Image (cartoon, rainbow, N blue to C red):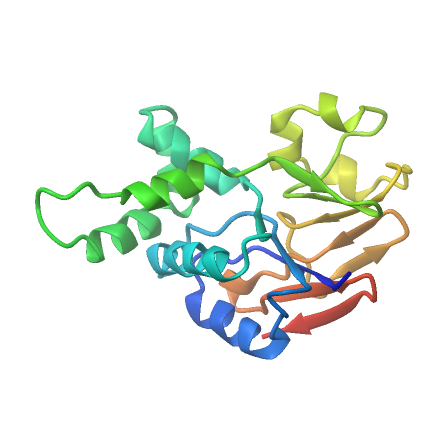
Length: 211
């Protein structure tokens, strides 16, 4: 078995994503990549980030992509639901990025392989020792019974919790200046889109990589 590399919220920061992967250099035959959601919005290169991740999956088929609340808002926007919510949470940057990369006037704004990427995102992933999720978990609720709203949006109730979820929870969503490391959880969103760093944790050693 190789290592697991779990990557925090990218938010359209292609330059930091490329720099991060130059630094961690995962082994395609042994290691597994897990992305914790929020690939889009706020940053300038949402289209390019998704294209990079789609290409990465072809090289490392065991890669796992989880859904973040920003992908949920984007899918709702595309369905005509809560459009204002998406736009007021950095969505305009995503639309601008896709419009910039649109080849011709009669082409769909979102390419089919990108739509497939967004539609296939999971809400959580677990291994023998870890649960990976975008935002966190609700205390006392079995994993399979957790509400999607909590998995995508929860903050304070999870961050403040010392509850034993059965496995250590690795999550993003809530930005910290440095990674949060507690006995029951590891938080790796370090605010890349806000001028801080993009973070990845290597497991099981708990070694952090930043750019």
